[in-house]
Image 1 (spheres, helix red, strand yellow):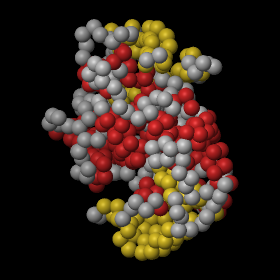
Image 2 (cartoon, helix red, strand yellow):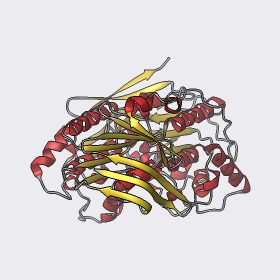
Image 3 (cartoon, helix red, strand yellow):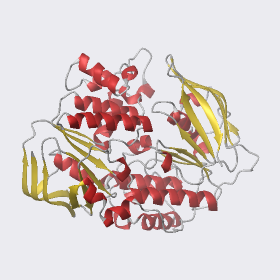
Image 4 (cartoon, one colour):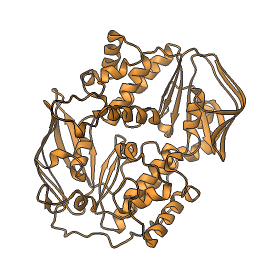
Length: 486
């Protein structure tokens, strides 16, 4: 049993998280839900014994506690890239990154159990691959397998469903249900009320860094405050700050993206198999498919970040790739946010600087912002209700607040092409709806077009006009389905 009574946890020098009373019993399943900045991740760390206690009583009788979070995933990926920079490998030098199999067994060696868990989570074919090259969803499944290797008595999962496609979410929920039936105590920290699995018995609502409500699932979901958060539909018609200079306008007859029989291959594995695809003027595309299908690879070809873009027939914004253009010639047309960008944004800088860096397509600030850019950044912070954090370190924000800032960074220059790769991960219901409102408004009132990747169908903004779907074949390759939506 874990009992917390009259405890204050230190978040930073000016904020604490408060719990008056919370008890987690053997075999109990609990979901904690709250808005960004409400203290969800702090609570997860507190339950795992990783948060500093200022006062109160904490009694933990669980012998084995396992905890997974975005921060832990980020740290593990950083460590893998630090083993050696694979972009700078000398001839004959080996990539020393750990394989998926080695990551799963890093804390406990058991080949049979590793194979069994990998099969249950559908990642057996990934076991020999380097962990750092996996997709977001694939890394999430790998960490859950790694966690289960230790036979934990209490499992704490911070946003376990983010980054997983629909089938993977269902499979994970089913697996967690099986673990609950085995008597394992389980805590899920979620942003989405609709992701609370059916086996969960109790729900806690977090507001302003305190546990506001806690009790049986039925009674909490019937509470009026919770209903308002869960069923929020009408969003205010918030005006967006203008661009710092007139947005780039391209002729309607000019295709924004043109892929002609594009192939991408790593060693013997084909990732993109002969894709021919165009994004024309006034088209807004949703890209969907399973984890590891190659969706993020397509986006990296468009942003100019993928080295195999040079060896393919690829034209961006009217300029053929490899014809003498620079990467900055491409990026000036693009606003971009993704899970990998979030992982890469590790420079030491303040929140306002992160926003302003969107004008320069840089990670961090390496030139002086204009007065207008500074003023517009203040307007974005006001829109985000994060004015008080302007001078605070970016890394001091909650994960969801960081994601909001990065989304705003992608929007600030009103780009020709807005590329959003799983942008709503880690956002609560209200902020997801607000972001979709901003995107629809930007598309409707300006000259921006959208490429949108999400495993949640309901996350797609209203402006979507076309859909590209990765359809799996029996040999783990993919076909491409193109749809024009009504």
